[in-house]
Image (tube, rainbow, N blue to C red; front, side, top):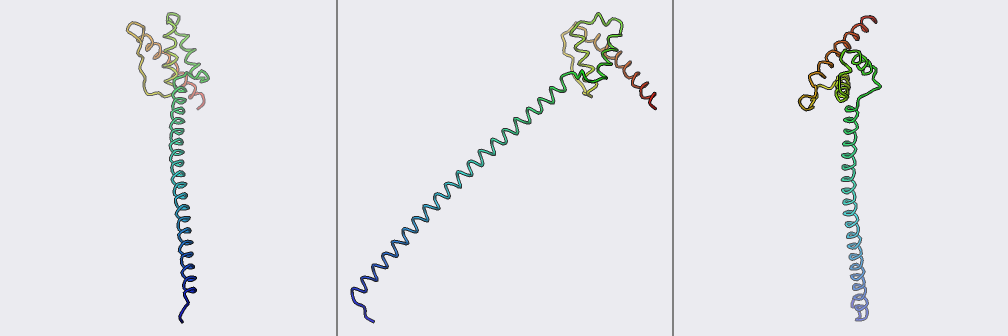
Length: 157
């Protein structure tokens, strides 16, 4: 079983070649793993960025929706027949002509808020601009309005 020097040399060369191949395979595997890790990190960063953009878009959309609802609540609904009826009742009151334009606008807002079931609001006009008169007109119209609604319900019963 003795081997010649040449056979031993060939065997040794094969071993070196095998080690060299394995080292190249190892280096290649490491490079593939490094690139995969880099791609994973890039994907995670992109996912995080997209998540932030989505949250921001949803936040903006929620703010816009809240603004739309607020504006709808603040703008009088002149398509509402009850508001139109209240305005006609207001015009029928004595001394209606003495109301100033801003007081008439305030009363439209009062009636609209009432019909939209707004629980409360503040009339913050300066002193001496007729807030008490506005309230008196509002209560008179409201009483007539409720009376008409009661009569309407009674006639349908």
